[in-house]
Length: 316
Image (cartoon, rainbow, N blue to C red; front, side):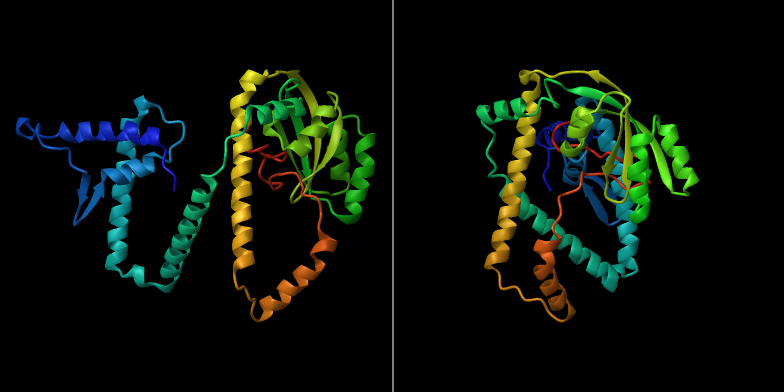
């Protein structure tokens, strides 16, 4: 929903200049058209291109013109397909109508949340300083880690056996060979990650580990055996870290505002579950306090090739 102002500023003058150049001398005084291309009876507007262009991250000014042309070609293909879909009355297909309505609702909800988030205040200098001091593993003692990982589908008795075996292992080969002997499925991966790319819960344990140490970490759909193969100190001073901390703290504040707004809307709404959903809702309400568990570290599924996770949002 949000557009990047700098992208629009880059795109509009370039597109206007390109379109104006297509005319002759008599057209020099005419304003640049807002139509980038005509496709049968339809049109592709400069606004459509700018909107798509604004979603491209890391775009340099020198790349904007070429990117605009590529986007235009894709929009032309899309327009041709839309025209054929309309000819075939696919816009009246029940499944398509449901999908369109679902997208509309999602966009409206997202727009409202984003507007709510605009009220998030920037963190103060004191808050930034406190965050820097409270997380030396991210800044003063920041390291780059070379990790060896085995994502294991282990549950119940198998998990208990693995937990007992890992402390005995001298290398990841020992763990892998043992897993094979137990016919336990696993996926291997090697990665290099900076401290800020790790979830805070995971970082605390990996930061405390010595090079060569093997750890077990929980994940969403697996258990991950990780060895810190090597690490290299690469600290950030407070001045270097400030923009990242500021972004992270502001993102946190935005999420709090969004969660507070949704909670308030739920509390003030007349909400009634019907049919089978009323039983499920009642059961969930009754069992929630007893089944609540600590949040697991953000991690990918075993087959994703990135088992430790993407790290804390906003500190990249």
